[in-house]
Image 1: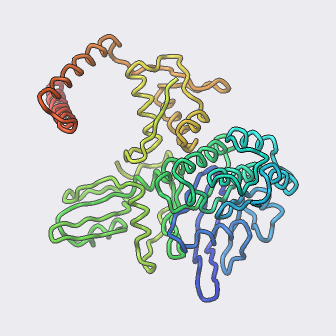
Image 2: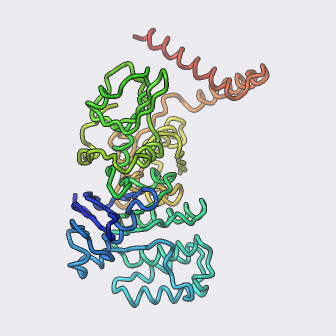
Image 3: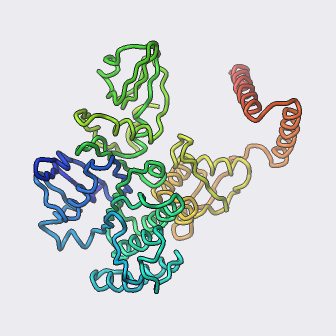
Length: 305
Length: 133
């Protein structure tokens, strides 16, 4: 399958600070990927590099095989981008924003944009600054969708929305995915809805990619092990230990398993996606894990039951 | 037409939740042979879910022979899972309801009722398996 986004050792430095370092990842086309990480992890930097708003310090980034910076005429028409904090001209009416979108984008799908605004009940004559936060987010999303991009990048679209507005925003997004099969990369620090709408997960923390892969595969390979107090070395020789905690009598590990877990002294439990993400994020900046083996095809070998 | 629902905290993968809900509906006779399942876009609008997940669930059900997708028309039930007739299900349900009422009358709360049911269910299942083995 072809990749919508590919980065190779992509790095960005501001002065002495690395905002993103050694980022190598592939996002297969037609995926809905969640990019999670704490504030300052490099999420926005990665997205800005992908749309050519920033120039890499080292490494490279390609969108459908083209560099957004060196081959903008090939790459940019296929890209949609909604920056943080709902970028709209607040003095423009919704209709004027649509006109702007139409004038700036040759492929702008006016009919689709109008139909979506109507379905969402957004008044065209209202100034965008007077709309509710949820409606503003919807307008920005519809404008980006109307460009008919093949890859849509969204920077923290959910952070300022209440739970209902969040669900409605995601509904519009998922409907567009169902309609056109576009690839989505959405950055967020809200983990709750990820399993629902995402099928790919990229965890970024301390300027590094900590984990990237198919969400089901990630859910299947991560386990919590609970057993009598012991050293984790034996487990760590076969599997990757993400998190270990010990009490006087008990040891609890969160591991990424690279094969069956045979040792009967451990009780094996499922781990929620939220706990997996938090385990990766709570690590210190210096800790890193080897990247997981490339994501297996959906019908590939099952690692274990 | 059936409606799906999605539990974020169940720990069951979203695509499996859909597979299980279709099977449940087949088992209870809510879906019959020839009935149409909602389209992927309808499910997306209903429960805000990744369309790829819905397609994965439908593919799985199709592979197992429960449903069939007809290009341009939609997805239809091919085979039901109802092993017992609806009337016998209704009778079982009535006796279960009677039992539930008697449990509440005996002072059991919801959690005790569930715990009692589950442990009895598991024990009986074990016995049943040993008998048939």
